[in-house]
Image (cartoon, rainbow, N blue to C red; front, side, top):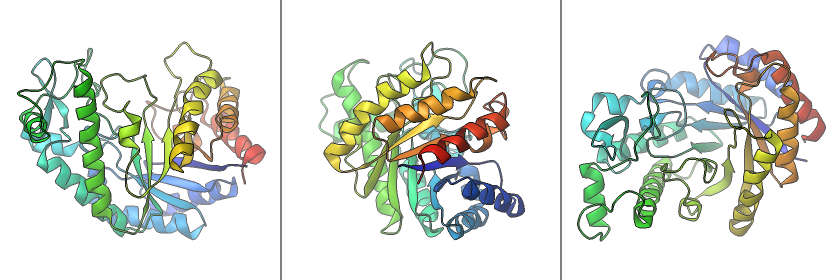
Length: 331
């Protein structure tokens, strides 16, 4: 038997959120991940705190997600830091600045430390480090060029003992350097969070996002206080069979979790499910469980109906499929 979770975002009205959380609890879910963006950090800290309190009062595990923060974590929220402090922006291999902050920029580290200490003060059970990555092309048209080659990266490279300028794109030592920069940033944020929350890390499916700096799993999973490791093999826009695709990424994740004594979480696609394909969601869930997932989570509540760009074609049917999976396999 596994525990089931889901993400929840787009609602800051406590009256509406209470009804939704009642529905989530009644369906048998055990955990809710709330998004906490830079916009929230500026305008909605107390509102998010109420969501955490309401979640935990129902016996549900509450996590906070740095949704889109700095353009380094997953999510559709805009990265304010990259907007207001242009010198933090990543520089791609073509020499162009992009709408995401560099993990090596001191202001980025300061933002993540402030995010983590604020998030921890709201009393969540976990901080959910969601898809840490270098820039992948969000908010721009056309193919993305690898990042980053800014002055902060050059300085960090030399500080780490690198000889001369950054290596050429494609060099193995450059991939390791970029993964190490993400790890350093996460360690600083975890330290700023203090002893309160536990920590969960979700990595992009290995091998699917070349250039993200997140394929060096062995570097990234060695974090202090890490309890749970996950990945999110969403099959949308790929000519694959969903259950097989989930299985291909969940199976090696189990080995990494076993080697480090971590809980294993698989995020199953609850976005852009075509009408009539909701059974694929159940099949993908079963595949994740067959690979040994301790936690299966869905992005997101009720088929993401609150964001039309990501919503399932039939949110009610998608929600019914999620709820059916919890009835079959949840505890």
